[in-house]
Length: 362
Image (tube, rainbow, N blue to C red):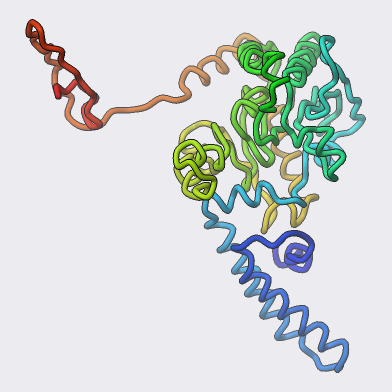
């Protein structure tokens, strides 16, 4: 696939050039120069161009297979990366948007509606970031307000009523951090969604398609199957936010990204997500059609499998999955706990050893 689509995937000039892509851009420029010479001079440069294309594909595979966490974040935020509305347009048939939360207003940063996905009738719930400046402002750059999460929950309940599965496409840097959102109860709205999604009596599949930041992602992120696309990230906080808290400067974002374990490989190892959806070589923005096809295949497989499970068993499995999330284990010798003797008039403090997790007198 990569060899046949080298020309399409290697067009780095089609969007912003990331720092780690510069060696790839140089090779691509050499290929373009050879093609230009062949047109102007008539000299056959096909052999040299073919060798350079082979080198380019090999280097792209090596580069994208070993991206650092901060580089993953940059790919996830690429301006040309497909958004939820793009995937809905490519893989969802007969999509019918349903708006409003019946309380305040229609939050455009979350889109909800019925549709057919690979033959399955379902309820689609997704973040919407917007493309141009006007649309981004209307959608608050993908940061939902409380009414957005209430709208999402209302539509989930509607899907439950008609026995339809729910598909959530997550792409947000986080919930909206403004005063209005706080006044209308953003924290409570997200908390209620977490509780209700945990016991929703219909299958739920969640996929992080780009950014999965903080509670903004969790608000529609509880599911029977949770996945992330290959070059997406899923984190309790953005790298810049983490760096600003720990180091008082956003310049430490690359180090924060390393510590947050936000890449799909780390998330799967920690059992935060269940699956990783592959992307075309160079990221989803290089070939959106292939990325959409991979996403459709994963969603179709997940819905087919979940629809076969009885509701009672499905809820039990979802409960067990949530209960086991965040488990940890202890290493080292487990010495019996010794209760310290309290001396009159003396206050003793204790801390836990990193190896034994037993109280140690200090």
